[in-house]
Image 1: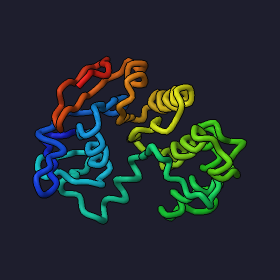
Image 2: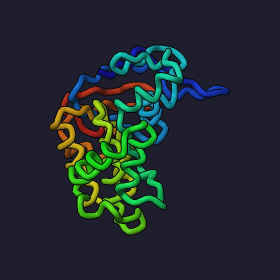
Image 3: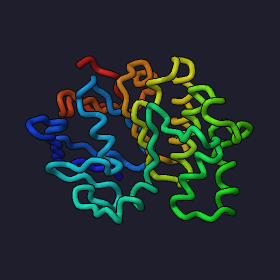
Image 4: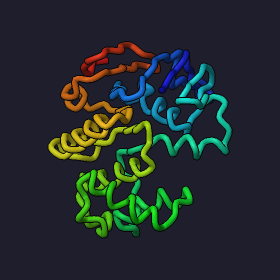
Length: 227
């Protein structure tokens, strides 16, 4: 499903974000990628959805080789990968429904199909009754649920969540992680990028630890390791 083969990422003049990173994530896995700030974990996330490309090595996402993918192929790749960010990235002048629908509109989905799909996805994330509220009328946790709904709307094979609980209190963060766990239970691969020790340790799932751009640990049922 996701394979990194000896991946290096360098930025000029002499910054190395990743150095010789290799791992494989199978379909349906839930994997946390952890490490302190500057460890390279967000670079890994960006490479999975082709925002960044490796300087050397290979990244295989299903049938795509990120090191060789063309610009015209990137939209098709990203429809297979839902992305959730720390800062939600919602459109403030659109309702929850409209934020989720927009992801389908830009992909050319019909209005009829949008009216069918969006309410179902909002119901999955627990916002069925708040579809017509604007982001300013929602709590931080609810805004993140809209972001998750938007990521789910294409029925992606992979969800990449980059510090999704970073702006949330502890109780809301646990609720969001329970939602990711339920999504994973339905067979979606979840890649969680986080430095939140409590979140990682509570999951009891695979943990890949990065330090200075290198994999220092890969444990099937791991914990957040001190760098």
